[in-house]
Length: 105
Image (tube, rainbow, N blue to C red):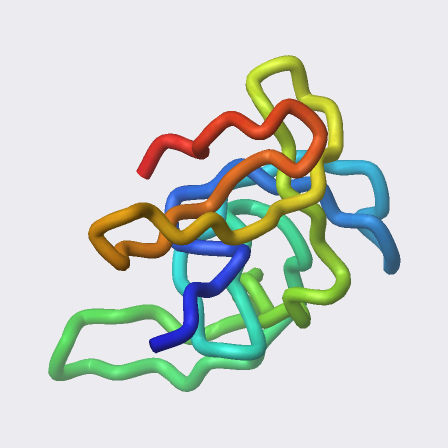
């Protein structure tokens, strides 16, 4: 079983595109894409739905962004590289390649 380097609720930085340099939290992961809370917004035209009492119009929604276009950040908001370490019991955990510390799950 493979371990994804970017996971839900991770704090990431967008490294390319219109929101380059902005920080956000991964809301949803649909490999190889992720949805970052409040970032990569696009306008979507929505029809009114009288049954659900919803008004129509133009709404801003989060668009998916490829995981190669985001980088994981640590507590100091510095970009880190992620590696995978196999423990003695065979369990895989993510780790910071520079400091060799395990990342909190």
